[in-house]
Every structure is written in C-alpha cells, then in structure tokens.
Length: 121
Image (cartoon, rainbow, N blue to C red; front, side):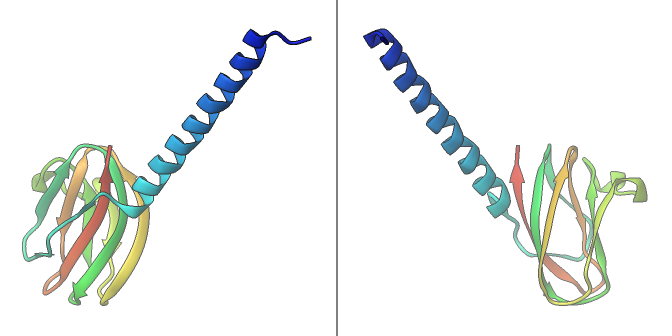
C-alpha cells in the first residue's frame, strides 16, 4: 500500500508537470504573437534590434519596391549572406516565423513603409 509520502510526492510531481506545461504554452504564445511592434520604417536601412529573437510578421503599409530584412548587428552588416527575408512589394500582412541570432536590420524598398513585429530572447 502506498504511504502518505508516496501520495503527496505523486501529487507534487503532477503539479510541477502542469506548471511546466503552462510555461511552455505561454512561451509559445508570446513567441508567435510578438512582443514588440516597430514604428513605421521607411527610407534608409535601419537597425531595429541587437540580439536574438523571432520575427513574427511584417506589415507593408505603403507599397514600393521590395525591401529586405537582415540578421545583422548594424546597417553595414546588412549583406546578402545575412539576408533573412525579402519584404514583398505589395501592401499586406505577411507571416514570417523566422529566428534571428544577431539582430534585425530593416532595409525597406524605395517608397516602401513597413512595420515589423518580433519577439526578443
């Protein structure tokens, strides 16, 4: 027969498992919703964030030529080797779902205005 200690240990382990499951769910929700939304970006190449994280979506507010998002720590590091995604040249909301490790550099296309939603680590 199980002792009271065995029963309490089993109950404790169940509570810990539920707490861990809830934390994992909250981490997932935070990551996929995005914690930060940038101000509208247009014109020159802009360093948006330094560090690692997850790009959730891009909103193109004003169309223009296609732009680019880079995984870089400065605008000068925005080279083709660090390219993450091309920003579409049409107005709309585009789900990205991509991790970055160094930082976010946004280079909107000519005449383009974009907003980026991302999560930081």
